[in-house]
Image 1: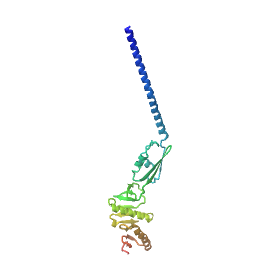
Image 2 (image 1 turned 60 degrees about the vertical axis):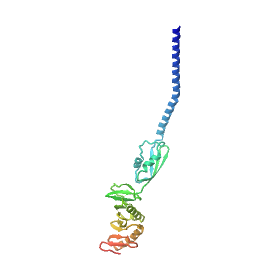
Image 3 (image 1 turned 180 degrees about the horizontal axis):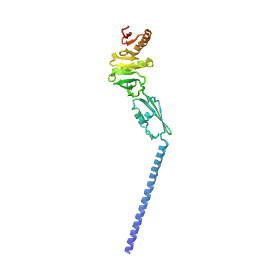
Image 4 (image 1 turned 45 degrees about the horizontal axis):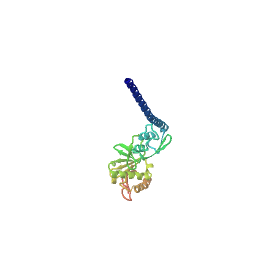
Length: 258
C-alpha cells in the first residue's frame, strides 16, 4: 500500500510540475507575442517609410559657379537619403564649409524632393601667387586656384600683398573703384601692382598708371578725362602719374608733359 501511495504521489507531483511549465510557457507567449508583433510592425513601418520618402530629386538654385554634382558631393549625399530622417543642420554644416558658399537654405517637399537654395561668393579678382592664379572674393578670401586654361576677365593683383594686410586691402579697394567706374568692361587687361600702398600702380592695357594709396575714384575720374586728351593728341604714353592732388603727369616715350 505504501508503495502504491508513493507512486501516486510521484505522478501527482510530475503532473503538477508539467502544469506549471505549461502555464509559464503560456504566460511567456502571452507576453512575448505583443512585443514581437510590435517589433514586426515597427520594422514594417520603417521599411515602408524608407521606400515612401526616398529622396528622388535634389533641386539646387542660386548656383552659377558650382555644379549640381559638386554641391551633392559637398553635402555628402549618397543617393540613399530619406526625406524624414535627413538632417538639415548636417547638410548646412557641410555645405557652408565651402569658401564658395555664403548661405544655405534647405526645404523638404513631400514626398520625394529636397530644395536647396544657396548664395555663392562672387569672384572679385585674381591673385597671382608666384605664378599661380587664385580667385578671391571682395574680402580677399581665396575661393580656389584657377586651373582652367580660359582665364576669366578679372583684375589680376600682383606683387607681394597677401601677407601684408594694409597693402592687400588697398589693392582690393582699387579693384572696387575700377569696377565702379566701368573700366572693367573697357579694358582687356587690368593688373594691379601692389608692393607698398604709396607705390600702388595699375597696368591698363599696357599703360602703367601710378595711383598711390586712397582717393581711387577721384584719381580714376581724372584718368578717364585724361585718356580722351591723350587719344586726341595721339600721345604714346610710357606711364601716367596720378599720385599728386588735382594734378596728372603724363610721361610719353621721350618726355614729360604736365
